[in-house]
Image (cartoon, rainbow, N blue to C red; front, side, top):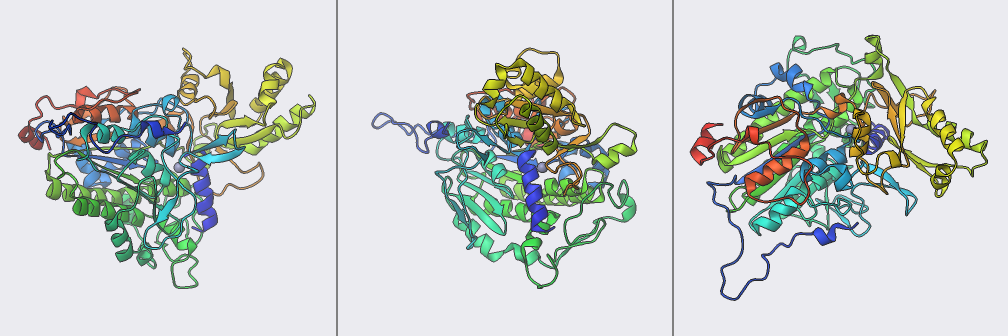
Length: 581
Ligand SMILES: [Zn+2]
């Protein structure tokens, strides 16, 4: 994949996919009376897990478990066979994007409380786009000589994460470590003050001064540079007959340098014989990156002795490549199936490592995803269903044309970022007092092919009671000041793109809607305190943090989720918990 495509995918993920300093937990115990024992909470291993493991698979749709589990033999199979598998887990909001999903998982709060409404939004103060982690007061640092720019932290996240609370309430014995390819995933899982939050930026591993660096990551990055994967080839794990669907996915857009079918060589442009920018794009879009993240996580377990601190440690890993691969090839592809076959092996190895180092039954793991994905429009059109491409710039053009007739200053629209439409300063206030022009704007938006509806901000604030599932979902991800003035709802199976009509899109498919294919994700717990079984109640990934909090004996400030009590083993003595493995 060339960097242009990677940039396009990253931008797509950005679009679809109050300083929190006061909430920063103290690292040390609060002041205490002289001679009193330190007020550090040291939970007994018999009553708490030693290690909490959060695995997020970016863009893993819930039905992948049903469809592809026959291809799995290791970690994913173990989760399904031995864990508590929630079949009907879904995000109850419209902004099914990466940063939003991770914030929900880590805090137990919906965007209405967390303030994380998208991967990126229009900042009305600076009149610029901002990412969910951009922090003007933070500075990024690269491992092994990686050049960085800018700064990222969790300061835009308005509530503490489960890990922030765990550190505060359980004392200094807790270590919080997260890894991912994306800043927004490593940071949202790690919270405001993780011990280490590490992500991959272009060609190397980075973090920011919000977290600080760790010597073992520096050593690992030097000893195992990603460019060692240069020249390797992504080939099928199983015989061709073991894969569902056609060999070439319909509507897919292959990364530059790759064909629409296997094998996929990691040779960049293939001219210089060494790791170039295109190689790193291909690596991001291959299972080799998942394997690397797995080994990095295992290294953290070994080097930090996670699970052996006497307190409760936390390891968060967010696998990003399934998202990049899914954007390129879509959900009905051999590439997606092979990605999960290889991830199954990586997770099998990770769990075996945790069994050996932490002890089976001493750790609890949850696996979920930040969002699902829609099939490519071409694939859906084959079924005869109404499907297509919604060109967002066409909406902008229609609004400009409409408001010109009402003598509004151009440009009237400042930005359309995913489904959020932001007017230029003062325009929306004027429209609110001008019902004829407002109606004309709303009618113009609804006339664009692929638009199902449009909501005004004031229709979504304060989570109004409504029987409309779509309006409820839109209001569950609405945050005043950050969300748009208008929220555009695409029709089901219509892919919203940033290319104008007549121009080809540079990726296969996407996500970010209030529809079930984007909301429905796997949710599986396994290990300490978990009752094996299949569960069919309607739950959400916001239930993960309250459930972890219960296991760890701490409380959260805000929670939109609940403790998943149906999956908690009735007797959690260590021997029983281990037997439940
Ligand atoms: Zn994405």
